[in-house]
Image (cartoon, rainbow, N blue to C red):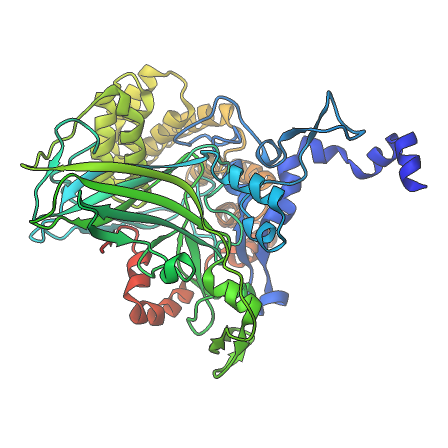
Length: 587
């Protein structure tokens, strides 16, 4: 009877279940499940951010709300545009023969596989291989053991860090290590004419993983439970394998090699054990998080030895692989039986056996791949600059910049300006690297060049504001930040900077108004609560300052929790290597 009434007059059903905000604010509706946190009643610890697809979408170029992205699509998009595509249907609710798919294609191929749902498998695999992410084998440098040590610096920032088990992208400013080094010899791109490598030498090959049509971090979701990694294999002309990083044991049926380049959140419990059973309530610290923001890139370094008797050319093949659940977690779910060891609210130090029941072998999907042939002979270490490679140079530089290799990033972006001088972001990206290095005045002419090429460019105004702020020109900084905010009124970092500078100018009431705009976007923004605490103190409003102090302490990171990383770093050289922002993968 209910179906008959619904078909007879669907309006009451629609009005009851389809609320206006579901259409008008569909990403915010999605965030109810896709922006999560744990709190004291669940984890017996404190507030801790879990996975968060919403914030990095909101702050990116994909949403059209972020001011500082590296790339912007022609048209902004929301969650439903990718995960609820239009599909033909004769359902009574169709419009012109189309409805929004409720299969929600994404990355969960495991459920379809174990349920033997072939159609869902096909749709999910097609989605995963749709080109939303790409891989490029771009550059190489000689490995010279006599090279001097790189200088390390701590990136300065006045922004506190959020308590999070997830990555933080353009939605906030985060402190981190940076590297100052001599770039040295570079051959790039690898497919340029005349590039050759010397037999008997080891080369450092750079692969670039670039997020394209994806509106959130890659990977997304419960990233402590997946196997997502970049594999590289090198073979000479006889088929001899020279190196292989990221192989899977048991002929592709077992765990991934520990030294692979993983994309995941490596969480630790209260005793420093890996969170590998979806026991997120026991998470107390993070060994490392490696995810790629939307419209950005990751640069991965592999050491490839070329024997003296190698027969050229050497073929490199890299693959970005995805297995929905890790080998360990799958075995735990199907057959895990605890044995010896201790367990409590905050940790699980038990060992498990996995022979109590059959365990399915989940499929591994290759999302993207790339190949390159290295000719052997007299080496030619020089970059080849061509307009057609401008984006490849830019992507390589973005990956270097995000891992803190500032001189490498500057080198790459300088070549972007040579490949396409009229591309404003090439000049601006040089400035980004210089500003992070603290060379703000050196960055000024590059931002001015970007604004000359593209007047009104919001992200250029933002970085000009950072230059003015560093110089103590707060009025100039505010002028540029207001120009940025006028185009992107929901960019949290720009709004936070406005509030911070108004506080520094002792305009406390104005600072409060600016920072309250941040909380309209994210009520849990730790930087906004910190500066509101300071501003209310400046106004002498002790009660409001006390409230903001409590919220700031609720959301800020527990720096002492990093002590828990000491044990896993000592026990695993591979995990410690992966923890480093810049690291090489050796065969």
